[in-house]
Image 1 (cartoon, rainbow over the protein chains, first blue to last red):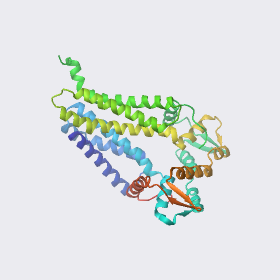
Image 2: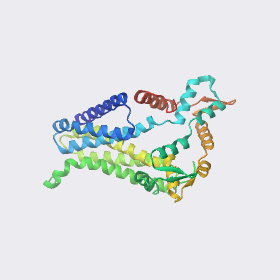
Image 3: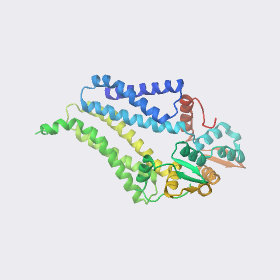
Image 4: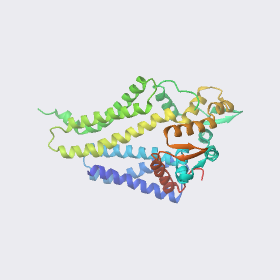
Length: 163
Length: 183
């Protein structure tokens, strides 16, 4: 039980640091900032962990659980940070109750959330794609994370075009 | 006759290797299942892969713990550390494969990367028609019963996504101090 509680305590401490920092000043690159927070809090907790878990097998189990939980949070955070048109619409319709919403207003609601344009804008903002002469082109060499994802995806078969 | 001294030195690390091996099994089983289904039933393959890894992990832990004098403590570690670690790593793996499967951003990037001269703005707008995507989304939601269309108005249908929405928007308000990126 104590391994789990130790890991949970360090993880919660990292979350508290994250919440406080976000209140004080929102970082520009959220994901990088989160990864740094989780790494720094763990590094600072190492002396405590070395004392509380005397054997290396237990220390490594704590490290693995902490790493896995941190990555889970960073992944979930991206869903919190972004905006799901489906969930937004569901919430709005639930608020409207029995009166519902006219189809034209639902269309307008979704049109205000341009899914593809927002993703293209994010690719341009991140410096991975540039718009030039009426064409979208890669800006620089192909990104490694994208290559890894697409490389793995090829194991399943061809990727269909369009949405 | 117990394990030799060298094996005994490494024995305590076996549960760690078990987690990694279970994750590897999850990955291999998921790929095999999705290929067997010829790319269909993606979610089913992810659930299948997860199940295969979990069963293997629990069986492996049971083998390690069987006959140990401190079996209670070992089971506690297995259930509170190994299984949560495996679940968390599987969640990361699922999100990784889901990016390749459903992320519009990855699809856009792959299509732009596939053509040396790039893709024209018009072609991209044609292939990823916002209007068509919007109507496909509405169609999917009405088909699933999550929303209901009646006399030109939309109403909430099945409420299964509402708790998810409440959690996501609650966390968004708490962490980011806003309800939507458009607010």
